[in-house]
Image (cartoon, rainbow over all chains, first blue to last red; front, side, top):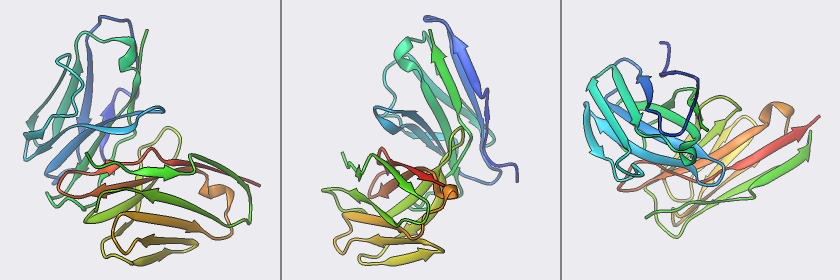
Length: 115
Length: 109
């Protein structure tokens, strides 16, 4: 299996622009997670889906952030408008089931820089 | 909110030395996981511990879950440069995984 695939690997944009991050989970995995990583705050859970349905979006910073999962093989995280404080590495992860201690498989991340 | 504190934040040691890093919380977790993350990559799971007092070994790495399931430790014997990376603990309770900020380990040859 190819693993969790994220695109783009790097994104540099200007403040105010829309940013869309993409994720393809491992085939057969039913849960998908979006995390954000910074030096100051570590890995923070933004939102997660079970069977394409958003379960908990309490970690989404504000209304500028939105996430969708239109089908089992694709998810997007959108930031509109972007701000410099959104600069971070964004990770997508997937898991086979809904059991909380199951192994998470992470993608390689998207390094976002908002100037 | 369940929080995990990891210590030390940074650790730089010589090849061949032993080390222990810690993961502590005031909350009880049903299980705890350790991940290692290398630059430019996502975290990769090393081990999951479930039972209080549980000890698991993975080659030169020894993981222990505290009796009260609030803390964990990772001990590395005879560290090698290939052990360099960010070590993250993550706990699950009634919410998805909560991660600590990690211990950044550098093993110098």
